[in-house]
Length: 135
Image 1 (cartoon, helix red, strand yellow):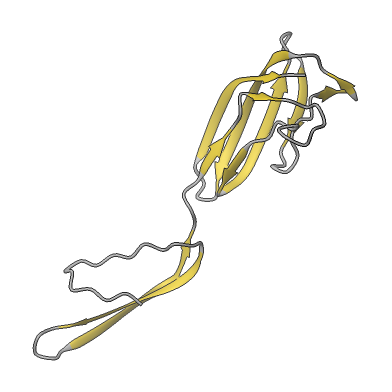
Image 2: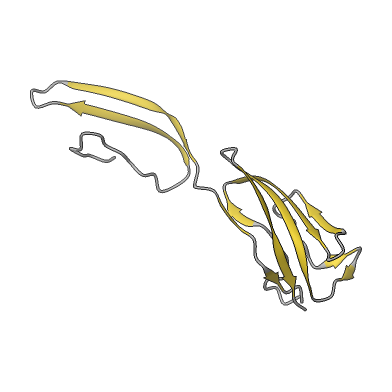
């Protein structure tokens, strides 16, 4: 739907989806040519966010430790206590850590996490950090 007089035109898609691009070029004496490319898959730029604290106190706000992001294909999140024991693991983005281990609430403390992330375009990230559980 765009029209331009630019020698090398470009278009920015505002939403994800499948598109077919058509370029109709013409010169000043009326000659035209058409090029069609598609379908093109538009995927938003991948990004992720891993919080450094959470408060699993049942108030419905920040109760679960999740990996947030868009255009993520897969994650593998592991959380360890200060002795190096793995206390949580999830490969499902919709399943986060609720601050418990074997059904018991963990005390306020700093925990270590590692996370392998793969984006929809196949790019892989290895992320590690600390998360503070606050009760």
